[in-house]
Length: 236
Image (tube, rainbow, N blue to C red; front, side):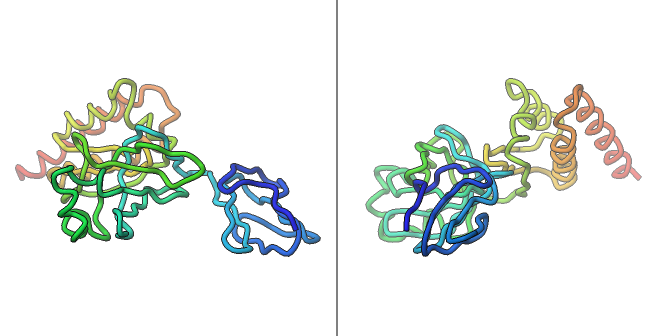
């Protein structure tokens, strides 16, 4: 029996992962007592089961990224957060509350962040040997209240933000709406309901047409037309 990988190595289809009395899980297959990767992804082992988490469409955490995630578990030392990545992120108490509140927070972590609540956080550290470490101590970080969440493919995030923030700032200005874009593809939108609906349509259009030129101008024109139409309807 032998394994041919380190936990969370990136592997490619057909790559030999293990030999002998091992089981294969999702993203892997077995032939003649040998387990191979079936997809490009991160290889993991739980017990004697070898599986591969596909990378396609997945967000791979990087230090200093801003992400939007959901609290999925409260531990003795902090919160576990789903950031739409192969890895959950760890938010330790010391990075989730002020130093002044840290002692009090440990007595009842739910009063700061409860399971199911959504947060904006910054990734402090990320590598293949451990789950990402995040913080909510910083400007614009912390619990999200109200608004709507939507998702885009993480590779489309740079187009949604635009060069030097041109696209996202245009959306905010034209629609007078708060928008936060996580590098993990989660987007938060808050504002008047009719303007939020227009923003969500624009975000979907940006994702569909990310590869085309002149997109910012087209989005601006579409928004202007929809705002005019919405204003006309309100006057009837």
